[in-house]
Image (cartoon, rainbow, N blue to C red; front, side):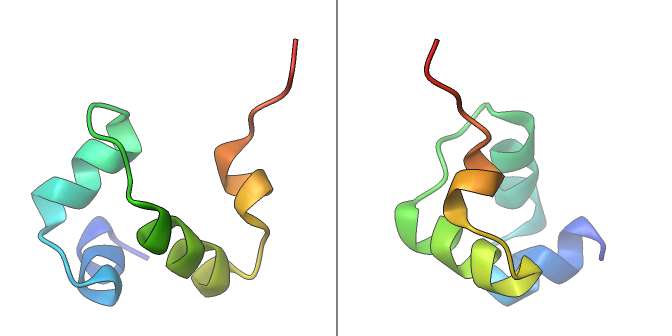
Length: 52
């Protein structure tokens, strides 16, 4: 999928989605959940954050 495909799925502009991917903008929780549904993975998997 292209950034534009995912942005269209989320209902945002491609540039906004690019900033989510880059980490320069915080992704809203509802978008995070929708991405998890799109890719059929858990939100934890997308966040890939481990306690140190």
